[in-house]
Length: 272
Image (cartoon, rainbow, N blue to C red; front, side, top):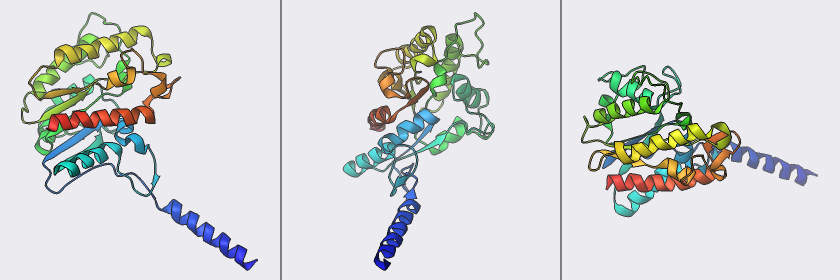
């Protein structure tokens, strides 16, 4: 009986140690004197890809998220010190959880300068610290309405004409920092039940324009075509890649792992 009690106590201690040793994955790769310093600005879709095969939440032991881990592997194999970190942009408070064309235009162009706007860093601030700046939109960017005939660069109404005005002005702003490389993600798609063919087709049309017309050869802007990865040429996020094919357009672990590898390939291509 005493032996049984000892076994139960030992098992309980083991379980307690196991759970208290759970740690959040390591989310960044930093060096004291990096060769290249990179920041990734994102919301939840980007975070899923950043974690990749690690998955969200705590893990037993401490793991490095997939994107920084792959960068570290490249560094170790090539004698490099590329650092990479991530942050929510814009933060939920005070600006609000919106990272669409209007919001980048609003923070970085309309309210440019050496002081933050609503606690968010401007390009004047970010480019002093980072050599490569990566930014993206979350999937509600694909809820693009029909044009209303009243294009307005200062409107947050999601139409193709408004988006083009904001993107053109944003590109001019990025050109003010020729020593900084920018990587822009094409906008995340939606699962079919959460949109309609007209919205989805407009989203594909706009990001086709971004790739084929807005992006200029030989400049300091590169495109990471996340949309193509998740749609495989269609207009919707493929159901096999969705967190829930009926209602959740976040990338699942399968897609996050695929995209993380391709994302790192793009980063290394740009840094080289």
